[in-house]
Amino acid sequence: MESEQLLLDKISKEYNLPRLSFLREPRKGISTKNIIASTEDGGEYFIKRYKKADLDKIENSEKSARFISENSDIPVVSSLKNKKGELHLAISGQQYSIFPFISNEETRPNSEVERIIYTRNLGEMLGRIHLVSRKVSIPKTIKTIEAWNLDDRARSVLEYEKILKFIGEKDSPDEYDKKAKKFINLKSSLLKKNKFAKRENQPAFVCHGDYHGRNILFDGRWNIIGICDWDISGIGNPYSEFIRSFNMIVIRRDFDHIEDKKDQAKVFINGYVKECGFVFDLTKLEYAIEAWYEKLLTIQWPLTDHYYLNHNKTDSSLYSEYDKVIFLRDKRKQLLELIKSCL
Image (cartoon, rainbow, N blue to C red; front, side, top):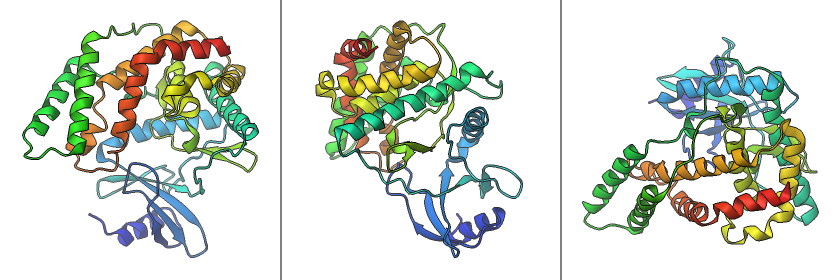
């Protein structure tokens, strides 16, 4: 494995940069391998390391981000090109991309007026991203978002049984094991009860894939000046992206009080509908909510990180994912009615 400084020296050379020096690891994000580095002339760069098997995903996300950037004035934050004109670099079997580092400490609006502007701008920008696919034909080289594909129910059940067996063989299960067991039992029981949504005739647009406030750069007036982290972008259902983003931006983790979110919901929804370029279809939205629920029931993350990859940086996500499943189990209709009342 490359030493840190040797890696930075190789990257400096391949990108014709002054010598890079390690500054720190990012404080946020699930990866511990990303680096923030600086050069002697004061430049700062974000170096993203991908998994070995991620080459297809990287290339697809680069094509998707370029499609949005070249066909709109949306402020896409793209990776730098190296000496060969490529947007990523292979070193010792690992794939790296390098971006100009822009500090994006997570901040929240301080007043209701600021929150309305913040939420409206996020809704409008998401609509503008989706509008691009209405105006320009999507290249055949852009693939679907793999992370959104619905997992096979039977395979998911087998994986859950495998993890339960692993927990059962431990001499002293810890608190995470107990929560994981409860989580798996909940998902397994819901998988048996749930009737899954039909999958045909759904729209396909180029989507960001992970659109929420932490991946957006703002100026001091909450205007959007950059959109980062296009890592899983590709072709997807815009209603799926809408509902996922609506949850992260409007509902957040306040699942018990969604009836109090109407003012914020309305500005996000109206901003989106104003810019997206198509008539918002509640039947397609209902499908997207059901598909999202199905995905949450079948996906094994973050359990796989803990039990298969042996790292705990995503351990806290187990609790939020558990709460999200409970929320969608109990309040899918209420969520749909909230959005319907805002249109």
